[in-house]
Figure 1 (cartoon, rainbow, N blue to C red):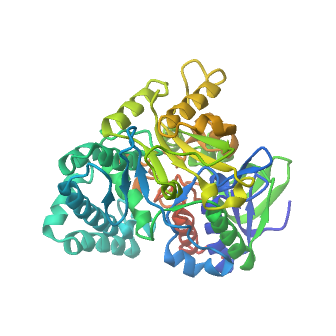
Figure 2: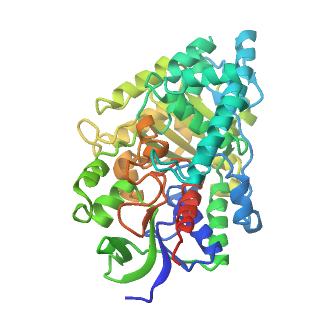
Length: 519
């Protein structure tokens, strides 16, 4: 067993990297252990064949917060947000709708919807801004709150009551827990616009637009926009991973790759180290797991080390992945009917109506995939030509809703689904099929196997109301610490949830330091 260090971080995904960097900058001796051969987790680049490169599972993201950039000196280590992109709501007849942060463009768009969209964005961004105190710190406890927790709630109350004003406050209280379907039907007439917003509200979650709480998931997404516009990841996200890694190493943290943690070592209810799959043991005063909370408690800790009631609750964390990832290697740039070439640099969305999105979701409830899934399409090579050979391109597609467990099994149907998706995109880009050189489809089961995300869920658990804020991931482990003394959580399964924000890692590090860290 090695000499004791201050903190061991399990997993070098972006949240683990953020946690490691913050702890190292605070003066702790940190070791980050990663089972893969490089950092990044789900945001690590992927390669198809030898010549086609993809930005990882997350192909679009908002900038990280200015506070994190400042605290960790990320700009010094090369971090810059990617080029801002708009959303193109594709129409089968070529009447595409361009959804910009500043407004809407497209044939057949009514003046009333244009006015309503401007007001809607302004109002919901204000709602998201009002919730920001909850995202920037650990969630308050339900009882016996500390002064800091009372301060967080005071800021939240002030933002909602005073910051929003009376009428906006009443509207916020009315919509906060309802579904996005009803809100959008009240506000807009254009089906393309409603479909695009509804898809954004539920993408990555096992929820349809009619599911209660999807206004909340929409507001969670808008939190990212408070830091800046959405950008395509074409090497930019690897720059974030690189910058976080460099920041941590500059502060003294060390990294070990191909180091698979088998279990957390616990004695008398306290974590004191980890055991690797090769039998090596490492000691530390603090252990922080960036892994899925379900695998942390079931595998790394084990039910015998936990209270029976807590172990049962941990087993019941809800979250089964419903998004597959399709990577396409292309011999040329595809042409989309009715879409200007310059718009291929944007995010292309196939979600022509809310009913379409809801119908796609319904299939996943019965372990089926829809013949017409919701698709989020990007072409990263238009932003970074080094991702493919000269003249060639790569296309990255998020496919919702694809069940973790498929009726009849995935072995026989995986290739069939890939070809169906290619054909579906071909309805908008007729030449696509002839351009495909190679493809890779990652089902939720593949994501679980390759990224150790339980049941292949992006966010390590649903971002539903009962698994958000002071209930994420579950009661008894909602402030980054756990029933095991010295063991903390910092991954996407913790507050405030998924996305490439780094906030779970940042907030977890601050929690460790607030209670004394390794000192």
